[in-house]
Length: 268
Image (cartoon, rainbow, N blue to C red; front, side, top):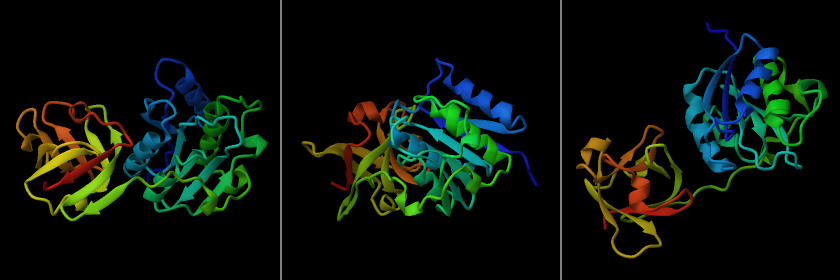
């Protein structure tokens, strides 16, 4: 049985400054045996929804451990810092909607605390760098087996901030769904679950909503190569959601969409 303390780390800190290294350093000093998996530090700045989606789609594939995430435009304000327990892991970060979907992916929130115990935090907590001074030290202590209840007072799970549910609207000929994320390759992931795509025929049309015309023809396929070079393919992605891609290109450029926009996928 693997008893290695595992910590995953997801932020919008980027790779130019020393922010990520400082957090790694805090963890290493408190829990030198812990192994840290960097999920990404390239979440678009302050994009909590993107961070939440990346985290929720990644944590089920990581070792059971502590998942610390920091996409925190409200750092230093009245927003709470929290740690959540789920059946298959612990999550640490700001109470701004970033953590809840990941907790659901790990079995649901079973307990939550607000991070207020002074001995769990840095001796001096910066007003702008809670990743280093609050979340990293808490994650290190939890990875070493310290009780969640020692980190601060209990929080009612139903009081946790949740992001608004994305638009997913089934229709007789298909569905309309919100663009959830756009990945490094320009593939457009929709909030729609893959089951909505299953009954559609081999050829569909994809159109931004609202938008003129009938939209673009796309292959309803299993992988990118099911469409001709430069062609659109709509498929079930590795996270179980509907995605739109271009064989050899970037769907986000072809469709001119951004996260939060709506796309209609239908037979006509």
